[in-house]
Length: 36
Image 1 (cartoon, helix red, strand yellow):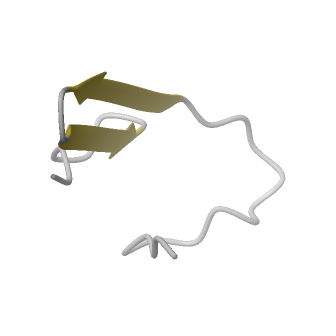
Image 2 (cartoon, rainbow, N blue to C red):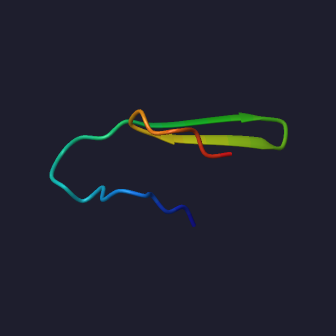
Image 3 (cartoon, helix red, strand yellow):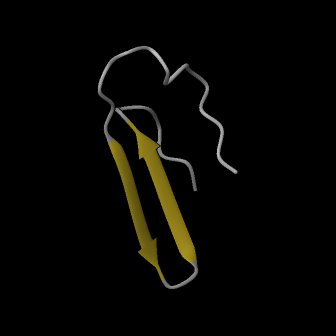
């Protein structure tokens, strides 16, 4: 389960980015800092 520090249910489009290398996963919403 991933939680965001801001509301995503605000009737606006958001950008989600996922990247995986071996066992490392990175997740980013809009231009917020990357979560590892």
